[in-house]
Length: 280
Image 1: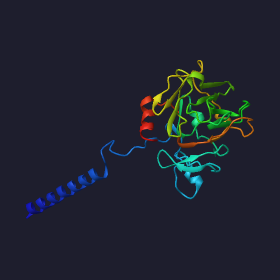
Image 2: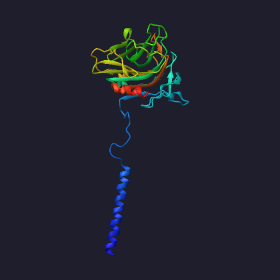
Image 3: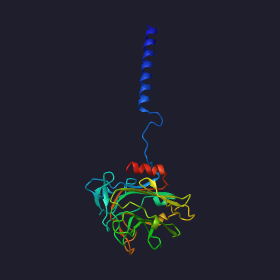
Image 4: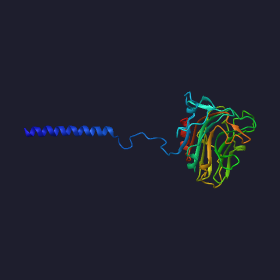
């Protein structure tokens, strides 16, 4: 009798132990067998506006996905983008954000990437795909801006004069340019093109990738090193527009913009190619 009770108790304990072990195995995946965020909190992607929302709220359609930052207003027209939707400017429209999050505070090296579509450049015009406004005493009131200038060969010239400007905490600035014989061919042909501007603090060089391919002209900011911008004076990020309304020259973007990204690191050639190939 006692033996039978012992056997029954032992069998019950064995079954219970197996059930518990089975539950533990189901409830706790192996280390590493779980989804990981592609851009963990505090990661290098500091600002990202896909610009492809389809809601009835234009502010929602232009939201920054990193910190759910909304522009103060959206006047740009929605068009078909490289993926989903995109926004298109007419020379007076733009998106204004409070800040590019903590991009300026962390960007020693950096990358600014986006898709663009435009058909030539009106004669005598200069346009801004983006700018970072600043309350510093610099004449342009900016910490950084990108400028497309007229290429000088007619309004429908597919080549573009491109100028990337940076201003550091001491108000020292640089114009890193693709102009003259180095102007960028083919990017204003009314088709979508991916651009990535990659600044490497270790070399003080700015590499321009067009559709995943590095441009041969790589301008350099002397031996400047870290971008060293003043985050305390940043007063806004303008996508598709200039830093100051009263700048006296230039105008907002007349063309399409999509998938606008800002990283606090110099992306590798492989990472840039992945953005292009993935239409990101």
